[in-house]
Image 1 (cartoon, rainbow, N blue to C red):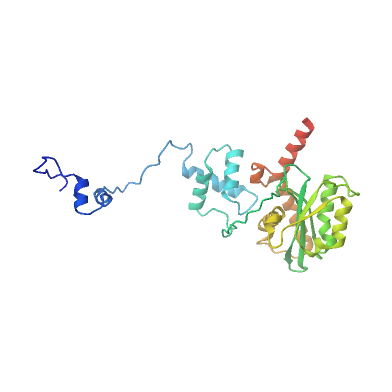
Image 2 (image 1 turned 30 degrees about the horizontal axis):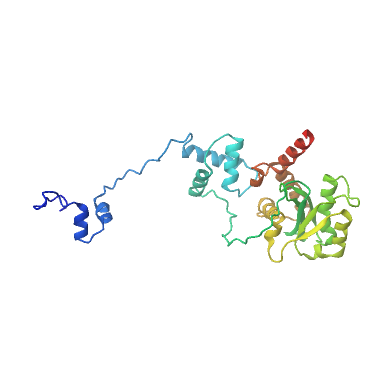
Length: 296
């Protein structure tokens, strides 16, 4: 009908006029006349340097060779791009891992964010550490405590302790280890200027624990009640520790747990790539800082 010539104007009626008179949307007309092709549309833009099949194979090889489990697409993309020199988009790695069910199984349900004005990540070392405790069940010894101390600056585990009784004395052990390693001792006022972020557990509220912090010159900094994200550095490290070294394993004694934590902490500090560190391991960040300090 749109091609019919009007006897008055000697011109075709046109699609717009016909659709208006018939009270039909032009999009309906174009959709009905569009030719449907069985050939999928080609990828727009320049061709990538590596095909999806080859990139998927590299992703599988990277996941298989990694000493850690349950890593997300950001870690895979960072290793491919920074370590292996494969320049690909992060979203492309995400798409391939999602389509092939390779994403981390530890991802939780999204929750509404809680906005906080303050920041717990520091710009230099030895300004704030985080500490927290968690428990693991063993066959022979029952529940076993794990206490850790984590540097807020580069997410490095600076101290740890595994024990049967998780009291205030045990909670101080990772701090003692860290002070000996980083400050060279545990004498009075050795860590003046350092703050310690912790929750409101009974170990951390005890007079003995707080008095020992005061002796070392450490300022206590308590997280908000019922908001563990304000102690997020230590909480996130303990979650990683459980996912990588605890879950899926059966421990018989305290010594078994202690050996597992020791091996994991060494591996974590030397090889675990942290996004806020530009995907460098905590030990690499500390080494770079020491070299820059010596050069200055």
